[in-house]
Length: 154
Image (cartoon, rainbow, N blue to C red; front, side, top):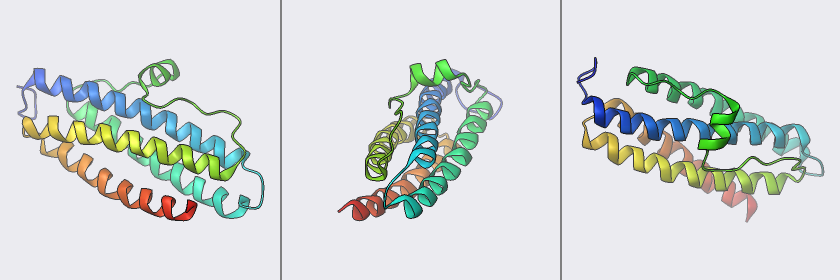
Protein backbone atom coordinates (compact mmCIF):
# COMPACT_ATOMS: atom_id res chain seq x y z
CA UNK A 1 0.00 0.00 0.00
CA UNK A 2 1.11 3.55 -0.67
CA UNK A 3 0.82 6.40 1.82
CA UNK A 4 -2.85 7.10 0.92
CA UNK A 5 -3.90 3.46 1.30
CA UNK A 6 -3.99 2.39 -2.35
CA UNK A 7 -2.24 -0.70 -3.72
CA UNK A 8 1.20 0.36 -4.97
CA UNK A 9 1.37 -1.73 -8.16
CA UNK A 10 -2.12 -0.82 -9.36
CA UNK A 11 -1.51 2.83 -8.48
CA UNK A 12 1.57 2.76 -10.70
CA UNK A 13 -0.61 1.65 -13.63
CA UNK A 14 -2.85 4.67 -12.98
CA UNK A 15 0.24 6.91 -12.71
CA UNK A 16 1.51 5.65 -16.07
CA UNK A 17 -1.84 6.47 -17.71
CA UNK A 18 -1.94 9.85 -15.97
CA UNK A 19 1.52 10.63 -17.35
CA UNK A 20 0.27 9.80 -20.84
CA UNK A 21 -2.68 12.10 -20.17
CA UNK A 22 -0.36 14.82 -18.85
CA UNK A 23 1.78 14.64 -21.98
CA UNK A 24 -1.29 14.75 -24.22
CA UNK A 25 -2.65 17.77 -22.37
CA UNK A 26 0.73 19.47 -22.66
CA UNK A 27 0.87 19.02 -26.44
CA UNK A 28 -2.75 20.20 -26.77
CA UNK A 29 -1.86 23.23 -24.64
CA UNK A 30 1.08 24.17 -26.88
CA UNK A 31 -0.98 23.57 -30.02
CA UNK A 32 -3.69 25.86 -28.68
CA UNK A 33 -1.13 28.55 -27.80
CA UNK A 34 0.07 28.35 -31.40
CA UNK A 35 -3.47 28.69 -32.74
CA UNK A 36 -3.97 31.72 -30.48
CA UNK A 37 -0.76 33.39 -31.63
CA UNK A 38 -1.02 32.62 -35.35
CA UNK A 39 -4.72 32.90 -36.20
CA UNK A 40 -5.56 35.18 -39.11
CA UNK A 41 -8.76 36.12 -40.88
CA UNK A 42 -12.28 37.23 -40.10
CA UNK A 43 -12.62 34.87 -37.08
CA UNK A 44 -9.55 36.42 -35.44
CA UNK A 45 -11.21 38.42 -32.67
CA UNK A 46 -13.57 35.76 -31.37
CA UNK A 47 -11.30 32.73 -31.77
CA UNK A 48 -8.16 34.53 -30.56
CA UNK A 49 -9.96 35.07 -27.25
CA UNK A 50 -11.49 31.57 -27.22
CA UNK A 51 -8.10 29.91 -27.80
CA UNK A 52 -6.70 31.91 -24.87
CA UNK A 53 -9.60 30.74 -22.69
CA UNK A 54 -8.95 27.13 -23.72
CA UNK A 55 -5.21 27.17 -23.04
CA UNK A 56 -5.72 28.89 -19.69
CA UNK A 57 -8.09 26.07 -18.70
CA UNK A 58 -5.67 23.43 -20.00
CA UNK A 59 -2.75 24.81 -17.99
CA UNK A 60 -4.77 24.53 -14.78
CA UNK A 61 -5.69 20.94 -15.59
CA UNK A 62 -2.06 20.14 -16.43
CA UNK A 63 -1.07 21.29 -12.96
CA UNK A 64 -3.86 19.29 -11.31
CA UNK A 65 -2.91 16.12 -13.20
CA UNK A 66 0.75 16.51 -12.22
CA UNK A 67 -0.25 17.02 -8.59
CA UNK A 68 -2.44 13.90 -8.71
CA UNK A 69 0.52 11.91 -10.02
CA UNK A 70 2.59 13.20 -7.10
CA UNK A 71 -0.21 12.32 -4.66
CA UNK A 72 -0.07 8.75 -6.00
CA UNK A 73 3.70 8.82 -5.33
CA UNK A 74 4.65 9.01 -8.99
CA UNK A 75 6.79 11.47 -10.92
CA UNK A 76 5.05 13.65 -13.51
CA UNK A 77 6.69 13.83 -16.93
CA UNK A 78 7.91 17.33 -17.61
CA UNK A 79 10.30 17.39 -20.56
CA UNK A 80 9.38 18.39 -24.08
CA UNK A 81 10.71 15.08 -25.41
CA UNK A 82 8.60 13.08 -22.93
CA UNK A 83 5.53 15.08 -23.89
CA UNK A 84 6.05 14.48 -27.60
CA UNK A 85 6.88 10.79 -27.12
CA UNK A 86 3.98 10.00 -24.77
CA UNK A 87 1.28 12.23 -26.22
CA UNK A 88 -1.60 10.63 -28.07
CA UNK A 89 -1.95 13.72 -30.26
CA UNK A 90 0.65 15.25 -32.52
CA UNK A 91 1.98 18.76 -32.44
CA UNK A 92 0.44 21.17 -34.93
CA UNK A 93 2.59 23.89 -36.38
CA UNK A 94 1.83 27.01 -38.38
CA UNK A 95 -1.96 26.68 -38.25
CA UNK A 96 -3.38 30.11 -39.10
CA UNK A 97 -6.97 29.17 -39.90
CA UNK A 98 -9.16 29.42 -36.80
CA UNK A 99 -11.62 26.77 -37.94
CA UNK A 100 -8.79 24.34 -38.59
CA UNK A 101 -7.36 25.09 -35.14
CA UNK A 102 -10.73 24.48 -33.51
CA UNK A 103 -11.04 21.15 -35.35
CA UNK A 104 -7.64 20.12 -33.97
CA UNK A 105 -8.80 21.06 -30.48
CA UNK A 106 -11.95 18.96 -30.93
CA UNK A 107 -9.84 15.99 -32.05
CA UNK A 108 -7.59 16.53 -29.04
CA UNK A 109 -10.55 16.61 -26.66
CA UNK A 110 -11.90 13.39 -28.15
CA UNK A 111 -8.56 11.70 -27.55
CA UNK A 112 -8.30 13.08 -24.03
CA UNK A 113 -11.86 12.11 -23.12
CA UNK A 114 -11.26 8.52 -24.26
CA UNK A 115 -8.07 8.28 -22.19
CA UNK A 116 -9.78 9.84 -19.18
CA UNK A 117 -12.51 7.20 -19.43
CA UNK A 118 -9.81 4.49 -19.33
CA UNK A 119 -8.27 6.11 -16.26
CA UNK A 120 -11.73 6.41 -14.68
CA UNK A 121 -12.21 2.64 -14.97
CA UNK A 122 -8.70 1.81 -13.69
CA UNK A 123 -8.94 4.18 -10.74
CA UNK A 124 -12.43 2.91 -9.91
CA UNK A 125 -11.16 -0.67 -9.77
CA UNK A 126 -8.73 0.24 -6.95
CA UNK A 127 -11.08 2.62 -5.12
CA UNK A 128 -8.95 5.64 -6.04
CA UNK A 129 -11.71 8.17 -5.48
CA UNK A 130 -9.44 11.20 -5.97
CA UNK A 131 -8.44 10.21 -9.51
CA UNK A 132 -11.93 8.95 -10.33
CA UNK A 133 -13.49 12.24 -9.25
CA UNK A 134 -10.93 14.28 -11.16
CA UNK A 135 -11.47 12.33 -14.38
CA UNK A 136 -15.24 12.50 -14.01
CA UNK A 137 -15.11 16.28 -13.57
CA UNK A 138 -12.87 16.73 -16.61
CA UNK A 139 -15.03 14.49 -18.79
CA UNK A 140 -18.20 16.38 -17.84
CA UNK A 141 -16.59 19.74 -18.61
CA UNK A 142 -15.02 18.66 -21.88
CA UNK A 143 -18.09 16.89 -23.24
CA UNK A 144 -19.98 20.18 -22.91
CA UNK A 145 -17.13 22.07 -24.59
CA UNK A 146 -17.11 19.56 -27.46
CA UNK A 147 -20.83 20.14 -27.96
CA UNK A 148 -20.34 23.93 -28.02
CA UNK A 149 -17.37 23.86 -30.42
CA UNK A 150 -19.18 21.39 -32.71
CA UNK A 151 -22.16 23.75 -32.73
CA UNK A 152 -19.91 26.68 -33.60
CA UNK A 153 -18.45 24.77 -36.55
CA UNK A 154 -21.84 23.57 -37.83
